[in-house]
Length: 315
Length: 315
Image (cartoon, rainbow over the protein chains, first blue to last red):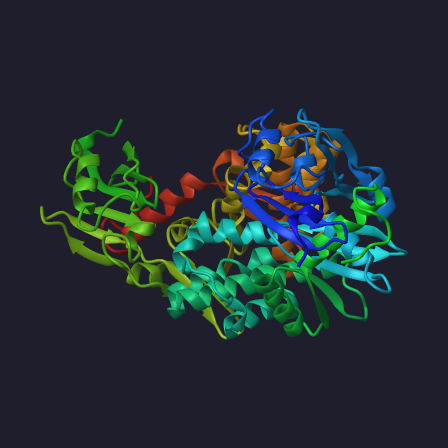
């Protein structure tokens, strides 16, 4: 068992609604974890140092490497985006370093952006650490990786770099429909595993197989309840299938689905399960990768690049 | 000038958020108008008669013909849907008649539904009166009519009947994005005529011409602000173009756009203007029809069918 006196680094995932920190040993082993709801959305300008020190007050005063919205204009310090194709080395070179008023070294990971003449721009802040983790796997990672979530990211990895990516608002849309739209009256409030419902597969088929555009399919959630008396839990599963299926269909139309090979899904267990099921219905093979593991792998790799951790060590 | 003593009928448009009434003479001429925010969403069960009588307390005690959500399960009395293809006569035959406790004759227009084996069901409550108005025009109406709004309706009229229709959640989606999603930070709160912006046309082209699925296009609203510093008013116009363009693209993919001939747009002036502009960008001819005029034409026609107004009179 590694003790706290071996602590070498704190890695921080600081988003809009949450602040999460892990205390690591020099070899990357996790010694402690902490979290709070001091997301950047609720911390006033000038309050970031205090919010962070409050969370890790009991931990050794080691350097901290941070990623997420904390590097945005609304965060602690704004860190400019690195442009795709982005290698881990390029991302490390874009890291912003400074010291807190108490003298603690802090480093913030930059976001990554796509800017090209032939399509709209796109941005990431936070998920780039998981992509760096993916690229650092034995044998590297080549091809498509999907990071489902509020803002689902479809990233293409090539030649050891994040080559390109695109954002889909899938999770946010599902939340808007189930919480703020008139469709909320047609679905239950609860969640649980929706992907086991036959109605989930039906929703995926509607959008992926039948090619029905998402905007044309969505009202059927209401009609099913009114005309068929569809159970509200099954209807929530159907809506989930429509939304995730709509994402897959939209990505395919945008040329993002590979012609062969498995699609990588990086994320929390329940969400990854739903995407795996949706791709199964669509007839596409998948490989699931643990999101938390990838974050940690990515952050420790970046920490080694900037000498926040000793070179060549692995947990 | 027709006086109130000529009053023959009150026609009522009673939706979820609003209650609107017009006092008509026997020839269909409008004598007075009134409105309140006693929509069915805010009137408790058993409170409909009182809410209505409060609004028209100063008017003569003539019969009332009502349309909209007032005929839904959450309304005053539930009126079953009439199935497509639905002629004005079939809709009139589905009207529910009763008397208030004070003895006033009341009639509620039924909604219309689509049920078929080869696609999802769909429902309308309220817009059917505008469609009846359209069908009653000199020479009738044949072809596609679009009724933009919170729930935009694409209806096909054929052989003097509402043959088929489909609902798109365009207006609701625009509201959700601009009021409840993270995109609200990228657009202004104000409205005004957005269709005059070059960015509106750009949004329409993205989804209609370039065929970019709506779900793939939407995040660019945020990216434009972050990367290009796009003005928030122009960005709101861009989002409006993406949403309306997404509706047109989805309807085309669902086989709803005619190969030739003008598309009818029935609606309030500002919304009709935006749709006209979007179809212009898409290279499709349109004809604009006044929504209020169509409601009145539809309701007076139905009133004559059930002898609430004398036969054969026209304003």
